[in-house]
Length: 78
Length: 400
Image (cartoon, rainbow over all chains, first blue to last red; front, side, top):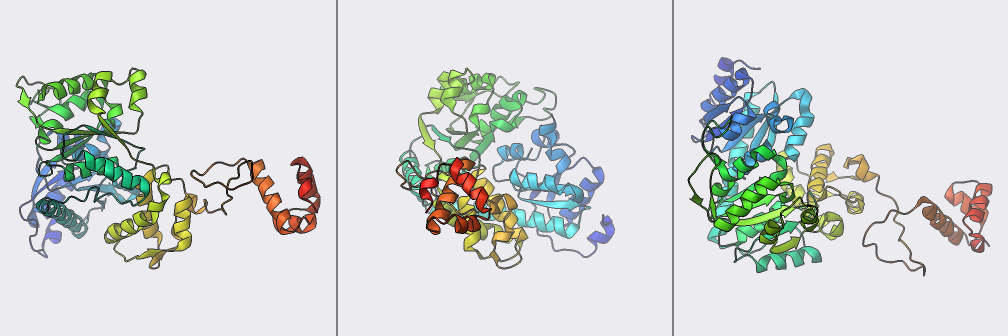
């Protein structure tokens, strides 16, 4: 995984247009990394640590969702 | 999960983040409707590329929808590809119910495009400016079905950490697709019936009645009438929802549409693959037309996608197709009825091996004017074997 500092240095122009991206991952490091990159690119980010919280928590109006495969299996494993 | 998120927002592009060694999960997710995938370890450029593309696509879809409604788009089933007689008839059927709110129930096998029909009904109806919400009853545990449909108040049950609007509320003013309706639990069916009668909903754990104005379209691969008889589906709900049944044919019954569909998928999938593959070889297309397509159009899309990834040139060749489809390329033997006249192959039959053998031997004998020696060579077996088979199959009248 790239470190956050080195990966943010060559500033990509912000393209996110303040749109909301939902990030679902049980790994806090992955969430932090994705949040940093996405915010740097001009997106707003809402994080969830499980599929359950993504389905029932905030995030309405998200333009895109990034979901890790572990969380994606949540419903099937119930 | 993907279907749940999409039940919340049918247009939400979902990017699956997966470990490199779990690529099959990514493939499964793509099949379930994910837009793209990125692998861990994460790469910033790849992630941003995927997110930007997904966002752009979403904006594009939204603006196309706006344009279509501005133009008052009337081309029914515009998003459904097909020119076969069955699909034309289907378009005519659907057209008749566009302007009313009559409950349409789309019957069809898995992968035939029931949701596309529902979307087309919505897009062609006066509700087209309202939302289209789809909920797949099969993917939702029984305990969550009511909460998904009617929403819940904060604290209504463990995990309900905030108030959430259900599908009915989200679809207010628009169309709600109840997909795989046959999988809905009996208790949810009772609540649904009440909602349809009273045109109000109450969120789980809530007491306020919220009026709703929603057109219902439902879809199922099951025979709902049989489900009613088996006691798994409420009869009163059946009569309320199955007012106007529409039957979507399986792909094997509209093989004339396969070339059109392949062309459509080549155009739409090309972008994701990042290479220009313009066409498909006649042999490969022929193989696609012979296959039985148990997974229907969805399976065809998946096969075209896989073949695009396997393809090295600018045309999909027979070798690029998955093996199980390549292997259906056998010389076709027209089934014969008792008069010996070939009849049109409306459906590919399974022919018993002894019958195949009989036809092969008859052909070989005809081709060699009844010479057993030459026929045996053509068939790749020994003369003695052929004599034995001719005796067993009672074909001696074909021998010279």
